[in-house]
Image 1: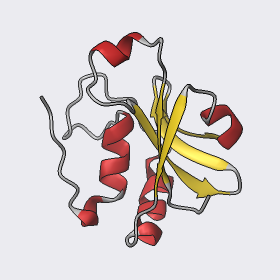
Image 2: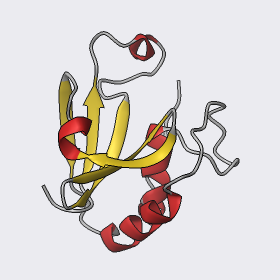
Image 3: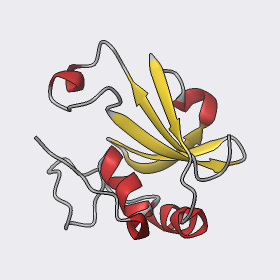
Length: 113
């Protein structure tokens, strides 16, 4: 794994799978040194890669550009609250929103059902 890799993960038995579309309902970014930054109910936090990968499936995406800026943004987001409202303008983050904001210059399109 390389710093900046986006790691999608899934959990077959989580209730959120009924409400969040797609196979990978959680995401985080590997920042190097066996650490991942992701958004969980306690807020945006850094965790050990081994703990993060305790799930039923993973998907790893490697952006070709924007990694340095994304990693700096992610570090600045640590400690922010979890976004229970799923409101992209409130300064809080849910899982995919965090990754989207970290890689904002890539202009990744978000689609919602």
